[in-house]
Length: 470
Ligand SMILES: *Cc1c(COP(=O)(O)O)cnc(C)c1O
Image (cartoon, rainbow, N blue to C red; front, side, top):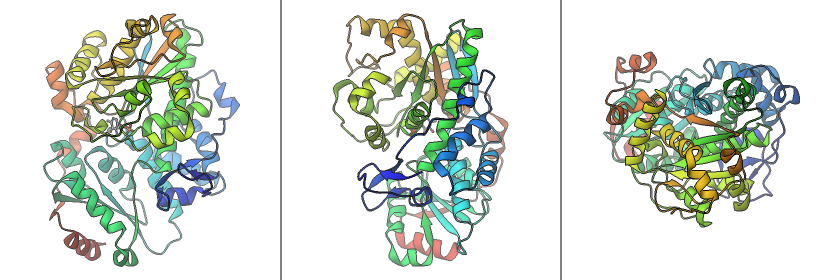
């Protein structure tokens, strides 16, 4: 597979270059594959439940072809996914796709674990370790740290702002051991990011250490997220006639979005043949993309803090990938978009629990509420010309091609559950009056010793620490 660049189509890179570089520093652009080959027909047309690892191997193969031998790729996939996504029906026409069964209880485990093993493979013949630096405001750091824990030839240093993340997130980050270590910075997330950026441009440091990053724009984090879209869409296509007697339903996936990496992976799965009719882009008050779909103007803005904090992104980096794949018009045919304010997030968690018994986290709640509104009249009203106002929460005024299948009761929704509700216990408690049960792997983290190093927001101190400790 050849990879090109969102800003310069003349760029040609192989998979290894795209993975190790993360982004193209010469142009500031993001790597994208030049084509999206269809998955194996046999797998696409299978009428029994698909196997997650078969799908993953088949989908990954054309993107890494020849650069990683089949036997190695298969081992990477087996090792990345001892857990898989779970599809849970919560009513006649709604499935929740639970993506929280990985070690850190958020969907980022799917991308980070694959990326870690691919990087380790590409680093196998180097005599020097690769040093990954990550600044995090929460979920990314724990997924990346956990994914690289014990991976040979790679060290990870995570920087996070002291006192600015939840106590559970602090525990998840500070309890890594061995090749993964965390530094608690007396500063903000932006300060952490600045320390990392300064390190990357420090020629003297780069002479001593091989540095790399692991952020969410890396193509090797995006590709594996397409696996679960394919898995879920094929499973729903097969199950639907039993679950709700709709033959060949129109499958709509509803995606809680921040940086839009998850949704971009859904687009890749659809290109590869996943029977997905359309998408609902669901956001919190950071509704840059819904506004763009509604008005045609893209206005990046500073982020605002919300209860769905992993989606607090005002300038989503994968927007650039989406517009390199489709025109705005094509997006409008495929997408509905929807957003909720904080009050709406709390009532969505409550309403989902009251209607279905399911406890959903604050991120998934936005997507659930979007789907619930869409099928209970909001899309019909939009079709009838009642446009509403994109400046208020709810469905933004754009009628996708699949609107008729919703009004004609031919549509089935897949709501992506991006994190376990126990990671956001306080917010869930506010909504339903009790905290969700804690999975044992989260509870275990609470009992581990704190190994994080505390540090002032000072580059020279950070640099000497790196040199002394790596
Ligand atoms: C990261 C994250 C998101 C947002 O995903 P994007 O790919 O950035 O759109 C949503 N929910 C949770 C729980 C997350 O951790």
